[in-house]
Image (cartoon, rainbow, N blue to C red; front, side, top):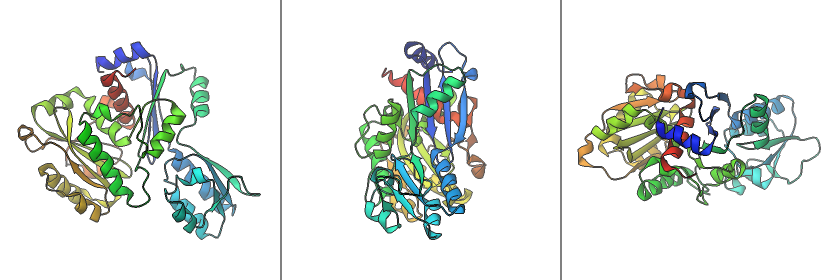
Length: 351
């Protein structure tokens, strides 16, 4: 374990890290003076997955639903469409509707009726990525200490009425242009366009980051991988349940990013994409034509070489066996993003 992390915990107290993905939300309570192998960790269904299950149950029961609460991950949208296709009513507050789509006109076209109060006979479903009451009760029930800091990550496309894939790549490009050190990509002050992360921070009260950032930071927890990047450029790949994020790294800094949907590329296609990406030959438009998010590039030092050493993590990494070395940062792949968040905070010493 990185000594900077232990020093950070001694100075600040317990830190609760939460990495919210499409399939799971992964939690880690990092405690001072406790060996990291003994830190409590949790793997739960993601908030969006929980909402999806409840919508599906309402569809089976032929019951109208009312969505209220706040902006959150929209991984329940297909269940919502199925609910409407079954001829069942769906209502939503304007705020909750932002979890479905930024454009209220598109929400209305889905047959969702805006209602600020729960209609009679509708099942109320509360939307949120983070419930302080739940986590406080959960930790207390286990006799665990109250966190001094909560740091969380979630994927945010940014507020955009059209073309959110393009807008997301612009967000990455802006970060890469402003500072290419990953630990600086954890937000204390969230840009106004990142509405999901702003909502998440309002609930947690702590720093937030994109899940892509937390995944990449996790690799750098491994001193061997970080040291290798000082000898030559390397490629880091997080194969998530729904998204693949790859980064070109040299001396711990980001030189380029590639993002695609996990279900849209097989092993051969990813191998081809990564080959061109390492050379800087994979344009953003080509990835978007294949229904991915795209690519962005930063400074590419000649001494970085071809970025051939490649490392994989993520729950779908087995799909790409043979394209690189599998690694489990600090020995636990499922909470790797949590370790990444903690590592990033320890590097910036913002508290």
